[in-house]
Amino acid sequence: MISKEGFSKLTLRALGDQVGVSRTAPYRHFSNKTDLLCAVAAEGFKELRRRYTRVSSDNTINATARFQRMAMAYVEHALENPGPYRLMFGHELIAQKRTPELLESAKATFNDFVSATEAFLEENKIGPDNLMPLVNFSWITVHGLSTLLIENQIKTTGEGHGVPSLLIGAEDLKIDSDQEKIEFAQKTLAEFLRMVLL
Image 1 (cartoon, rainbow, N blue to C red):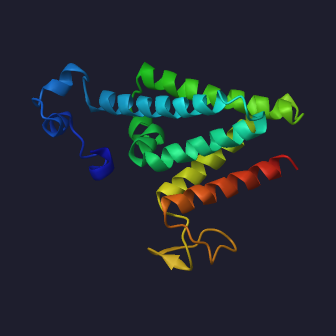
Image 2 (cartoon, rainbow, N blue to C red):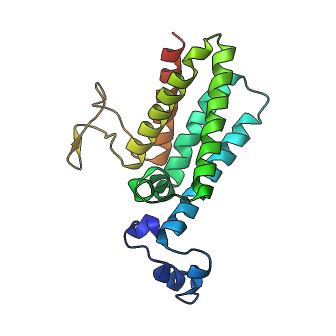
């Protein structure tokens, strides 16, 4: 419902109709719409964390590859779940009182990314003073990349939908399919890592 109609049109009564229960049934689980949206956002963070765990449990790769794959897991999560992803970071919940479950799941997911960044720094003999600046810069990079891709704001040639190509020298760039988005994200993150390691 969120993906099709957006957050504003979602109501607990409409949700009850959609899943074939009484209009009051959702109120047995959620006291209001904000609680429902917080639960959806919390589940989004939990799914992202499950992706992180799959990457971090792969002992066949080094910390640098693990760091890069976690960044890609973030982008893939956004591309596969655009509605919940927008909700996880959107103003709909930031402006409201967030539930303890949402805050806890967001913090745990962030801490996993911090741990991967710490291991990356250690492996590449980069000082620990760079930890939080790199965490912030990395998160800004993957979040910005994810948002631009799900909003189709990285255009192909010239103008598309009234939005000019946003990348310098990208006049011939073709990013239309999900696979092309994934490939673009992989190349972008590889370049990001190369710059970090200079």
